Amino acid sequence: MNSAMPMSALLWFAAIVVMIPLALWLLKRSPLGGSSSGAGSMRSVSSLPLSNTHRLLTVEVGQGDQRRWLVLGVTPHNINLLHTMEPPTEAAAAGSSGGPGASATGGSFAQVLGRLRGPSAGSGSERAN
Image 1 (cartoon, rainbow, N blue to C red):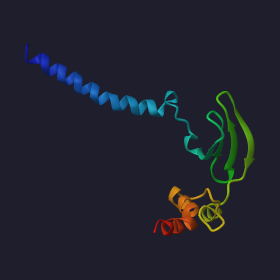
Image 2 (tube, rainbow, N blue to C red):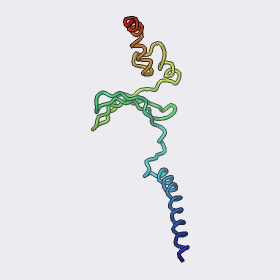
Image 3 (cartoon, rainbow, N blue to C red):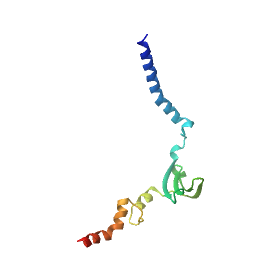
Image 4 (cartoon, rainbow, N blue to C red):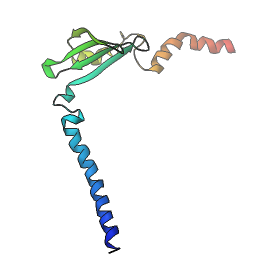
């Protein structure tokens, strides 16, 4: 009888370990898990912090021809729709991200720092000699 006790405890442990991923999988697909049929139809495009508690968000909603960009004002107590616009086409969005007309704040940190230090970086080293 003593050998049967550890074997049944091991079987119960194995059953529980197998049931945990199964329960999580079922929860993910139930309404309680927060999953809905349109879960893939919304994404954050950009965020601009205005202060510690206020932000401007651009969110893309919809799919295909129904896609729209919403500009939202977000505070701790409110979310306000400020503007609705058509999203740019894929080619226009790719061309405007790093072209010669890009703003000084665009690009990586290293690129922005290089533009800011460009003319003064050489003259600083000459003064030291």
